[in-house]
Length: 58
Image (cartoon, rainbow, N blue to C red; front, side, top):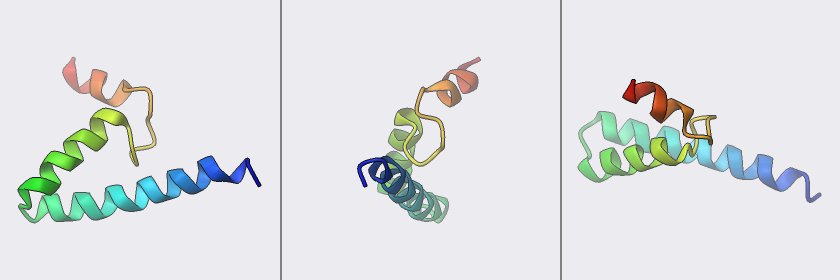
C-alpha cells in the first residue's frame, strides 16, 4: 500500500496541473501564476528535477 502513495500524488498533481493550465489559457491571472509555480516545482509536468526550467533558460 505504501508504494501506491507516490503514484496517487503524481496523478493528483497531473490532474491539478491540467485544470490550472486550462484556466491559465483562458486568461485567469491567478492560474497563470500558479502554473508558473507548478512548472518551476515540476508538479504535474512529469519532471521534478527542474530540467524543464533549465532547458527553457538556455
